[in-house]
Image 1 (cartoon, rainbow, N blue to C red):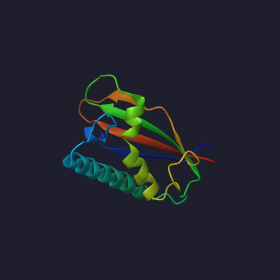
Image 2 (image 1 turned 90 degrees about the vertical axis):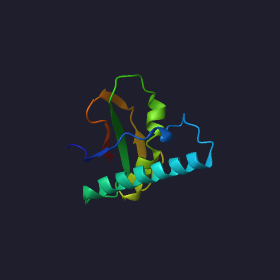
Image 3 (image 1 turned 180 degrees about the horizontal axis):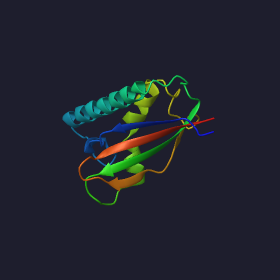
Image 4 (image 1 turned 135 degrees about the vertical axis):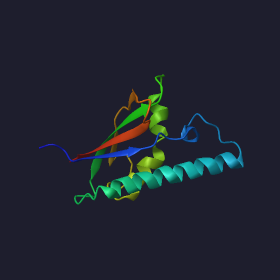
Length: 128
């Protein structure tokens, strides 16, 4: 039996969500907070649109695929860290109780090039 999978598509996170970007000013903190809030809302809405009747799932495995406009090197840890708001949105949607290691397993992100449609595709698989 194949595990249940939810696939959601989100925009590439804005640079301000990278852990490498210092937000030393008040305006920078407001920009980061606004970007996080938007990412969280978009992820929550994407999961809710799937209308998953078996939720909440006890544990999930999440595999992020990043599609960037250009081919360049990307840091796995920074890419995953920029998705914190999206992961919180998945929890807000009620798919999984929380994003702790008890309920959530992160897979290594994969990076691709799509010049016309940069995006993130999150493959969320139910583990039981």
